[in-house]
Amino acid sequence: MTMKKKLKEIDLYSPIKTFFTDLGYQVKGEINNCDIVVKRGKQTIIIELKLNLNITLLLQAISRFSLSDNVYIAIPKQCTLLKKNKIQIKVLLSRLGIGLILVDIQKTISYVEVVLDKSEYSPRKNLNIYFYDF
Image 1 (cartoon, helix red, strand yellow):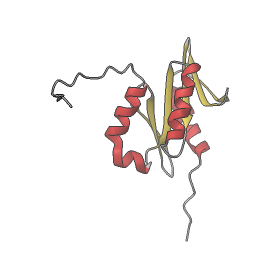
Image 2 (cartoon, rainbow, N blue to C red):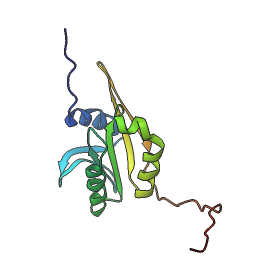
Image 3 (cartoon, rainbow, N blue to C red):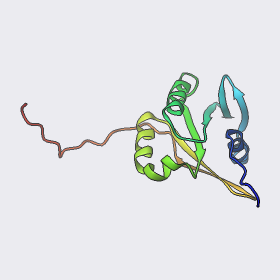
Image 4 (cartoon, helix red, strand yellow):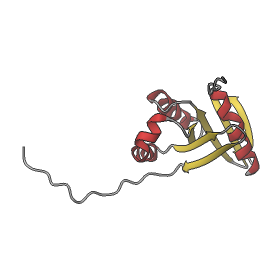
């Protein structure tokens, strides 16, 4: 009987490094308490890695805006919270201006997918809301 290897945060690093290196970026780990710093020309991207999506990760990502305007979080594609609430999570991250990278780690190969680019969020006006006097 074989035991499944428990995923560690460091397991996300190599596939992300390969992904960005293939796009012509320089990739370094653990710079100024940032998990990954990616540079190409004047563009700097900060990526925070976690095995689970939680408030700690979001707060960490928000604090990285003091270092760069381009902040992403990277989590395993198999993250339970993501599976249950993908649309709401994408909306929340959009509103925060944080990009999302998913890492799918398979036995022989890993896949990296940028599912949400960091963008300036502009909320849609909801014209269907009616307010009543209280």
